[in-house]
Image (cartoon, rainbow, N blue to C red):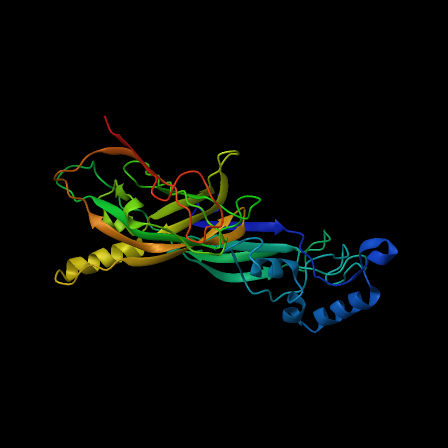
Length: 343
């Protein structure tokens, strides 16, 4: 879900607290020590919010990549919104430590931007033990160019991945290894194209590259460069396992804007060769940071002469890394190519 929308806003009582000691040793795990409560309230009166936020659990978890990966949050310049005494504007209940439980976060795809104009609370609302929080954003929304029916007179394009590698993938099994299987999906391919590159990975932080010859070109169904530069390609990485179902290692999305810009530059300067565009994509799964994909891509014009209709392309490659961490079925030279041509 996180990669399916240009902008995603997540808000509510997320229930993250300030990480100060409580009276757990006395049987009250959520009750703050009196001295700590008074210290926090005094800092609130002095508007020392930055100091307090250094102990905010959500801020720490986000920095560690453990939750809300690639989300943003505005600067908090208002007092904690929990736990308030009902009917009062700025009085906190002593049985809970004041905290910013009520939050607004957002995430935008590459090439899309949500401009935060205002983030504030409403302390005058006294009907709850929470104070409401609101935000104001400015978004630029434009209509996508529409395509007429594709015919032979209009140019067609394909996206060529020239290299692809991963870093920081999580452990896929009890041996601390993973067999990454890559799926490339897009909103605008003529046909769904999937690349399955199965390879042994010895160390989760080790780079694992897919050879250029194993990377298919993705033929796109739109003839509009204006539309292509606003589109995105979605990627899914799974761990291939013969015993259990494939586990998802991460999801990512990349904008085609830079590839289109490079192609247009080539059209303007025909004597200068087109250079591949480098990309780096953050992977996440269930809001947790799960490594990165990086590589090079190039937008190319489709040559109709001698082309064949390919309905689905699946390339499987089994390799054992030079580190020799684990042996597996198949040799380094074993390859399986399955091509299903359109009828």
